Every structure is written in structure tokens, then in C-alpha cells.
Length: 297
Image (cartoon, rainbow, N blue to C red; front, top):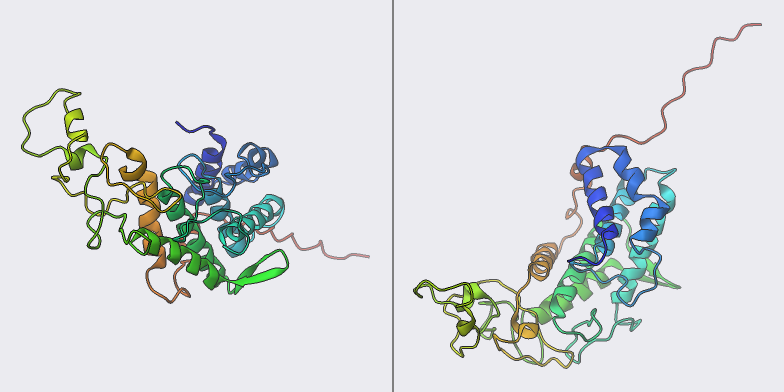
């Protein structure tokens, strides 16, 4: 269960505005109160860490897209520029130069501060970083500032690629954390569909537990599933009974697929369709005032 609802309301409101063009949604997501409740001004160790329980980084980036390509102006500019600036700071925090987050010796960013199941956070951050890079490229902006330093958009893609490469096997274990990708991948996945044989007799609701502890390799290969991943020392144990290593999750795999799509191809100039997503959004330009009345003496 999500710990708060405000980031979901911000995220959902942004999508509803794009889908309907109803300005009341834009009013909703650009209010200071909504931003505050969603955690936009909270200095938390998990600020900028995208997850199933934190939609704020994605929502801020989604609304940054609106500012970059449509620039709706007053009265929305205040919060939109804040979200844009905050998105830039989040991207800076992902870079190794600032050491905001630790990394394993193998190079995996520990966005969850050394807690188990780190890959879902790294995959989602890789997606957001690549998407922001594409946004900037589409806006003919070569990079962004981190304090006094200016960084090229290529730096974001390098970060994203390093994390996805780690997930796919470029790590100290030479282990692909995506099932059935590469020569060495998890074969005891914490997943009922993978571990219970197809031909098994009808079981009770609790009958599947005995398969959880068997040492046999998965009879059913869940192709493409990313597991939870290594620990903070790059260690990994292929144990079905330990979900902290071998459990695949929907949030993690959604981030992985999105990152893989975003990183496909080298030419980013045409990666973003600047207009279609806004096809339902009306022009917010001020109406042309009526002509003055004819002059009379």
C-alpha cells in the first residue's frame, strides 16, 4: 500500500490534463499546496528516488515536458519552473561526481541506501535520466547545470546505460539479473508461476509452499523478468526462498522495459514527439484583445 496519495494525485492529474485538456487538472497539479503535500519541498533521503511508492520524480519530469515544449506561462510558470529546477537537481544527484548516493564496487547506484532489492530503483532512474536527456535534446538544449557546472545530456545517457549494463551482466558476478538473458542468470526465481511444475496435481491454496523450498531449477522460465538483484556488496544468492535476491516485481520490470526502449538507438534528435501528447491540450495563450473603438473627436 502506498504511504501517501499526493504524489499519485499529482502524477495522475498531469496525465489527465494531457488526455483531456481540462485546465482544472492543470490548476490542480500546479498549486503550491499540491506540490507541498506531494513532498516537492521535503529534504528526504529518498527525494528523487522513483519507486512504486514515490511518483513525484516522474510527475515532476512529466510536467517539465509541458514547460519545455508549451511554456504555458502565468499563473502556471511558478510551480512548473520549480518542478523543472527540481528535476535538474534530481538528475545531478544521480551522477557519480556528487556522491549523493553510494555505489557498489561494481557501479550499481544504491538509491535505496543499501537496503535490499536495489535494481527496481536503478532501472526506473535510468529511464527518467534518459527521458530527460531526450527532452533536452528535443528542446535544442545541450545540457543542464548542476550548481556552477554544466553537463551534457550525454552524461545522463551514460549513467543510464551503466545501470542497465550492470543489470544485464556487466557486474562482478557476471550475472544477468534478467531471466533467460545471457549465459548466467537466476534459475530459482521467487515466483509461483516459475517454480510450480505445470503437470502438478491440483493443490490447495497453501500447497505451493513446498515448491518454494525445493532446490530444483525453475520448471517454467519467466523470460525477461528482472529479479530483485544483488546486495550492497555486489553479492547475490540464487535462492527461491529469499525474495530480497530473486523476486521479480512489476515496478522494477516496468522501469527496465522503459529504460531499454529509451536507450535503444543512438540518434536522440527524433526520439521525442513534441506534439502528439499535447493534442488535447488547448492553447493557453492570452486571447487577443478586441480592437479599440474608432477614434472620434
